Image (tube, rainbow, N blue to C red):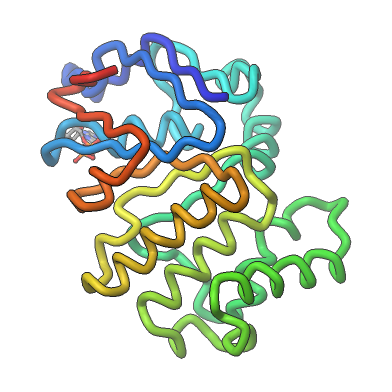
Amino acid sequence: MLKARQIVRKYGNLSVLKGIDLEIHKGELVTIVGASGAGKSTLLHILGTLDRPDAGQVFINDTDVFSLKEKDLAAFRNHTIGFVFQFHHLLPEFTALENVCMPAFIDAKSDETEVKKRASELLEMLGLKDRLGNLPSQLSGGEQQRVAVARALINNPAIIFADEPSGNLDSRNAEDLHQLFFRLRNELGQTFVIVTHNEHLADMADRKLEMIDGGLAHP
Ligand code: ADP
């Protein structure tokens, strides 16, 4: 469902991605590991269409994503891709429920009642039934990250990209979040690509890709 061909990314004369080939299948949970500076975040941003490569192609569900114009790419991204970052990036002045609804409300065709219903169901599924009306500041770190996961799921994305999603959590909350990813993989067939330093998560994954100096050790 995702194919990357010969991805190259340079910053000035620093070659950060040196021709990456990669395939991700539906329902797979893939982790990307490697030393700091190896190019993991750069690759994840390109696979997630947040950044354009200098050369190479990314196909998601057979769409050649970088052939899309910026506006079409933004719409494609909102419909097809979910993101979870190390810092949750929830909007502080909105409740948990409103934060989860946000990516769906960006779509002008969305039905507000339907979206709120789905957001409530997702939050309930993630154990946050009693937190719908709370602001992010009223939630624990683990709860905030689960709200971010619900937000990533709201548009029923083909794939979720996560960049150090448990990097800011204690070990207990990190483990809970990892179990949640596997549950979503098992119950919804959700596809994940996760950059992580967490060895336990990396080893549990269906596939662990290691980046070394701008390349993949085991493509
Ligand atoms: P990782 O996620 O594996 O730690 P990154 O993808 O963040 O690695 O970075 C890879 C390399 O690219 C590093 O040497 C980093 O300094 C460089 N880099 C990342 N982003 C930029 C940028 N916006 N401008 C210049 N250099 C960058």
